[in-house]
Every structure is written in structure tokens, then in C-alpha cells.
Figure (cartoon, rainbow, N blue to C red):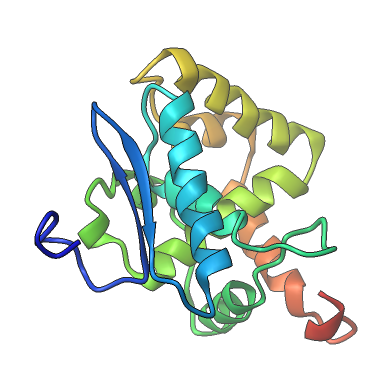
Length: 180
């Protein structure tokens, strides 16, 4: 990997997409299943869509890392860290997230927020789910379908506040992390 892709950061797994191939490389270790689910999701998105905004690519890949019997796909680590961030004054900002175009600019909180937006959109209501699915359908045929943040603002009044409330609800006192 180092000789073929010398500029890649230190990671356990990678999705590499080129006009000639889509490939996943992963270190065989304790987290190989999680890593393969994450990287394979990137491959599926890039194989099926004309374009994939970085935040959405990472948000969906983070979403599908979670497996098991939980249909909610709660990434407990992300939920806990976002809950802590909310208590420290963090607020979601889909426009800012959408503006990130280089993976090197993505920070851990950006991955967590990306996951939160995807989770919220898929699980909050039929309307939020349809909003995301319609955008994905547009991405299948159009490499520049416009700003998703603008769509969200037009369709979901107070979307950032709704996401904030949604994320905050993951760890209400009556809900234990074990039940998630």
C-alpha cells in the first residue's frame, strides 16, 4: 500500500476508487469486519452513484459499520461522543459539513455528525427517510444535484434543532447504553 499509495494516512482499511477499478484493502485484525463493512459501503456508493458528497459517503459508511440484531444501527461511540459534544455547546451544521471536499479536512466529530445526519434522516420519520432516498436517487443520474443542505432547509423546518434533539435523546436517563 505504501509503495502504490504513498500519500495515504495510517489506517486499517481503505477504499480506492479509480476509473479502472474499485478496491477495498484492509488489515486483517480484530476490526476487519467493521472495516470491510465501512469500506465496502464506499465501494457500493461509488459504483452506483454518479457522485457521492464526502459527508454522505462517510455518514452512510459509518452507519453500516454497525451490525447485529439492532435495526436502529446505533453507533454507541458516536452517540456518546455527540451527546458529550452537545453538552459542551456543539451544534450540527450540515452546510459546513457539505462544504468539506477533502478527506484530510474531515475530523472525528465530522464523521460522527455525518453518521448522525444519516441516522436521523433514515429513522426519524417517513418524510426524512424519503428526503435522503430521493437525494440518493438523484445522485444515481446527476453528478451535481445541488445542495442537500438547501433541500433539508426547505423540507425540514429547524432540521438542525431536530437533529440536536434526536442526538440528545440517545442517552436519556431512562435509556441505558446496554439497551441500545
